[in-house]
Image (cartoon, rainbow, N blue to C red):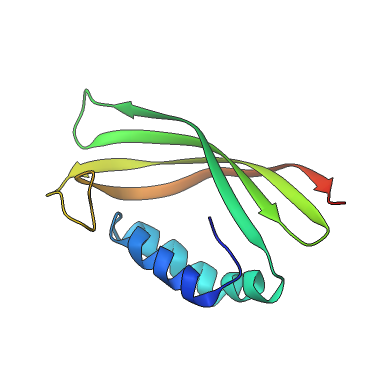
Length: 122
């Protein structure tokens, strides 16, 4: 979830970046540099992601994964629905408070982030 609050965004991103290599950090830096997070705050936009499914190939290490999800971008007057597909690899790391599952996401990449439709809010 992403909500229009600078402190919440920074806290959530900080937690998330512990789970991934520099591929995720580069995406975050690009979005920040292009004003995405400032737009979320100034436009009072919320974003939610609901995971449909995840596939993991455990036959080859590091493990390749693909994540299929729906993204909702909630604005004052509308909700934009998107199809989101990402992929990457999972590397075993020590479990910790910052990485409770014991995996590090590497080579994270967005394959698709396609608009599905817009719903008007009442």
